[in-house]
Image (cartoon, rainbow, N blue to C red; front, side, top):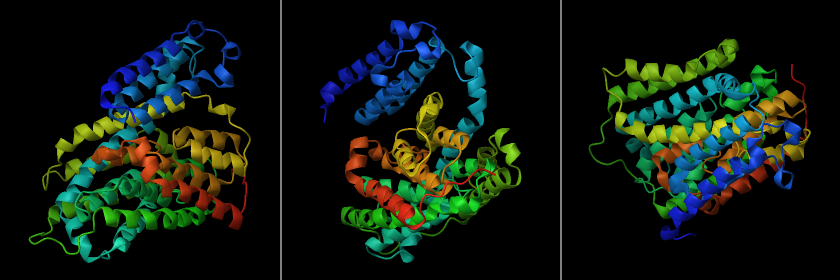
Length: 438
């Protein structure tokens, strides 16, 4: 572990190294793609992404600055070394941003919107009454993870993680172990893995023609994973900070806030189903789900106004995630190997540090995958690092103590073990069943 006195100069050196890589003579020459050099056989874009993620892992207190710098370096390199997927120069960059703006806008609106919903939920005092329903020992923490798992099957995993984290903060007196934070993220990601309306990646599969029944097979692995990581994480959390046995005196429910939370969740579910199920062609026109969440919040403001004090923190989390998503979208993902269960296992591990949306898009373009196994791998695999999924980034916006890759890996080891165990159960029971897109 680096001492604090060395953190700033080392981080500055890493920043200068990234800029130096992007401004080397070979990067500045607008040569053809086949002429671009590859250090150690690795495309330069992947090397820059790896450098960015390694810097984030060691200097998590400057994660936002590093992510923004990494995105700028990769954009600069692509500009100078051959252009973007949509063409060279500024037109190519604008075309690329236009192709991804709906996804980026939805992420921004959902992270900021559900941060306000989570604060409404907290101030409604519902979490203070949950100890009456949850068991008084470690099983209370596990039941809470199960509830997050179920909620995420119908609602975006960002919302499930934020609501689960808000409840956990109340019932555990806001003393959450990093391992339990990892478990909350894992539960939200696992719960959406088998539902075509529970995660962006599974919805993409459905729209492109994957059978929802094939995606549903992911729950064989996800349910196994929930048991493997949920029990040890809950036991460790109970030792770290015991669950409240009884609600505190005077904890009366704020019914207008309860109504607002239920209203926003209902609107989000209806919008999710309407856009991704009934009118999938509308999904690429506007960020409908994020707009629906914010519309419901603002329309309900005469009852109880949102706590806009939560916005700065959620905006920082959003900027961090959007920078990583933009960087990932510029990677040459077309160089991935042919579909197989081993490739799928590797994609899940890669999704811990590499956004799963472009990985899923590539798999759909290739075809020939087992969609349930892929949904489990890329959906749950991102839980192994705090910045590996949008749910993890959003939750760590509320709990900054989770923004350490080293602590997340050390204390959240049951999540990594659960990923391997769930994948093994999925492979051994249902096998590798690649299916064509309809």
